[in-house]
Image 1 (cartoon, helix red, strand yellow):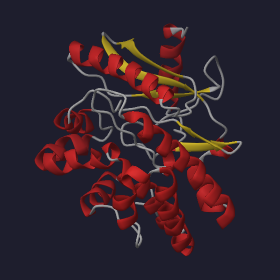
Image 2: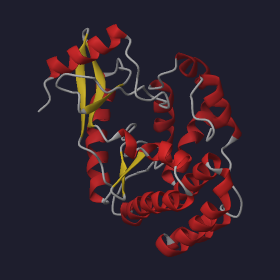
Image 3: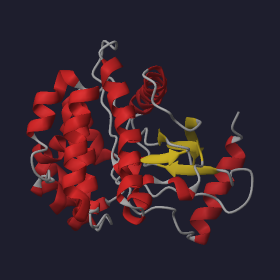
Length: 280
């Protein structure tokens, strides 16, 4: 059971001290890990609030269902709690998550380690992707998955997924498109985004496609380590045939050469100042 008062005080102190977030890669928030106190072994993610109480309650219920669905499909997750924290008369969505060892985060490891080690991490992440999609049709609702390299840690050879927001379950495509704008941490995105709503909405499409999530993983690896790109493409083609045969034709066709990000998403990241080079 989380002590809401202690959590609110931890967030207040962090904001007052203007502490450094553990990551600046986030689209929705900048997670932080307190240096001391009751949450020092956790990562805290604070999101924008909404004036619509019903929308917040729906978000909380969807997050609970999404975490349950991820666990049911065999996706390894750290202990993750979603709550609506009272703050200045409003409720603010907060996720409190068990911290993973910093040395296990997949993205910096992919940048630093050798070819064999990076292929082992790709295999670990790929197994999670395949496990999810091979079981996802058991759910009678729209459900997606965002298994990017920056959303994994690899602990003792197992890929652990840790990005549960927004909860990619139950929401229609248009509803999720609106969420991408409503919860964006960047004010500029909330102002400019509605003018390009169709393109913003399209950002999510990869997350709801089994072959595209695998292709996205391989594309990110190729952009991080272009010197190993041909090895990653070969791994991806073999993996699709071996572990995701239902989608192998589409996946393999998109891994004949280095996959590229849509130009509008690259432009959005530059516009918002989101760090991510070189896989941006």
